[in-house]
Length: 420
Ligand code: ATP
Ligand code: MG
Image (tube, rainbow, N blue to C red; front, side):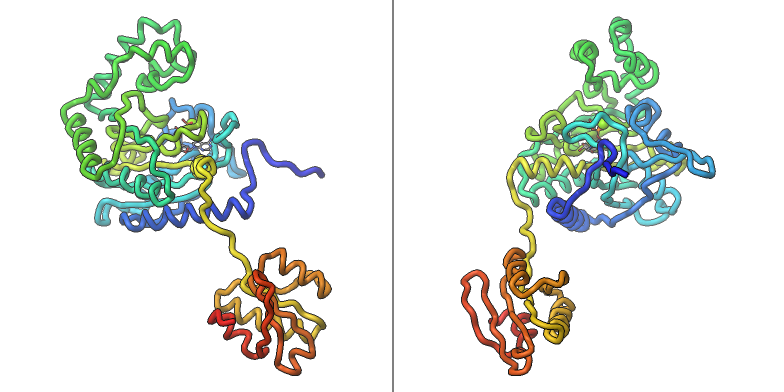
């Protein structure tokens, strides 16, 4: 059998994994300081959840879902995004009876059947947050501020923050009619997808990336210019709130976001580095989603960030996130008795959370020395029967090549206390 990897997937090897962990840790810490707890929902859910929650007319549902029937003939789908699952969990676990808002963050693999290209995979990682229960724009500001803080912690201080409002159930239907009036004149020139959008989800007409449609949407009326009073008011408060915190942003009337559930505030964090896949992070309000999925009417807001795209951003900036760890001590042993003795020392130090190493390949003395050097150990101790008998051994400080004599029974304490 010849093994291979499904298209759009990749192994994340140790060096990269270290960066993932670092990002996760920073994210988790920032989220907790903003009052978020972690949630972990299943990787697959009933297909219906995403059809309803993400929206029938979205690219994700129409083209990108990994849907299959299980052996019990239930239609399941690998999650293409995190929000629907979190909201489902909010409803099923009765979180509405807890003090609101419910603030949750997650990190996990997502699955979309996409055209694979740079920054676009079929299995990818998202980290994101959902704040469910608050209707007021203060939480919008806080959510954007959380993201801003997170990027600052990673030393990424120049992402463009673009915000827009896409209205609510009052102003959006009215705007849809205005939009349809505009597009009706161009109906024959629209792509096939947009012909469907025209009927089912006119707002997405603005978002189409097909050339012929982009030319038409250039002069289309914007929702931001047709908001109801409440939405206008809320959007102004979001802007004021961001100003108040000194967060710079651009109002971009063209942002509508790919998923159906968004309302009012939507936003994106954009980079110049990632090439065509410039959106590192996207989010917004979803005031109707909980109700759409069978819960009581409850507003919410969240964002999701592509970790692979974030990594590309970090790579492009050449910032090394975290140094790899090297062993403090490698024990090089000669003979079985010395090995057993040394492995007890190693074991004790490991239990003290110290990174130490001993051969597990059956290497000879010289090869062990060479390996310890390759591993970039800080200290190396060579131990044989003679050293154990006389309680004296030599410790080599690898950086300088200097050697010192110490007693064998002081090894553990010296390494623990870093006193050589
Ligand atoms: P795009 O317009 O690039 O397709 P999207 O609107 O589909 O993005 P969202 O569903 O909002 O993206 O997901 C949020 C983030 O998740 C994106 O900004 C991106 O960083 C990341 N992301 C989305 N799809 C992929 C993918 N196929 N591969 C890698 N990252 C992805
Ligand atoms: Mg997409």
